[in-house]
Amino acid sequence: MTINTIDQFIARQTLVSVTPDATIRMACLFLNRHNVGALPVLENDMLKGIISERDVIRRCICEPGALDAMRVEDIMSTNPVTVRRSSTLAEAATLMRKGCFRHLPVVDDEGRAVGMLSLRDIPTEYRLMSEQRDAHHMGAEPA
Image (cartoon, rainbow, N blue to C red; front, side, top):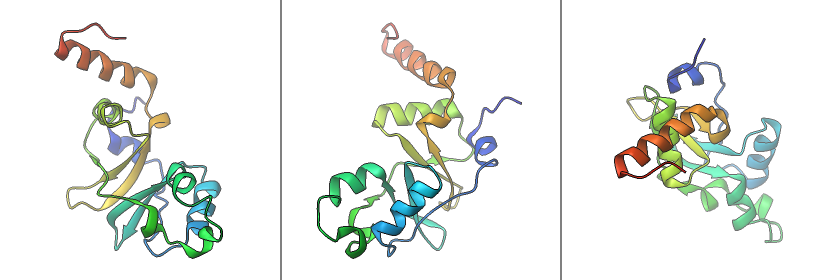
């Protein structure tokens, strides 16, 4: 079966998330345990932000005691760009490439988080299609 839509992709995954008041240590444990690079930050199923490995490294790893003292809400990225579950993988690839994102929360029509998409989840052919489509619209040759 060829997966074309995000909805088809997220049907195969379990959403792992953290709450804004979780410690950074707890978020790191979840990132490691589930082998993911970012987690959606949810409050009552609503997306409040996203926390990534990069956030942890850049904002708190050098601060003594930060892993236990700081909360996810202290370092998470708020109002992240999202993609609808009905979107295509090529559309998600375009959003990720244009925004220089490696992770993209997936939401339903009510804005509830239903999944998380990583750049590594998107097959190479979709990324190439996205680049070619953009190059065509700009009148340039794809790289």
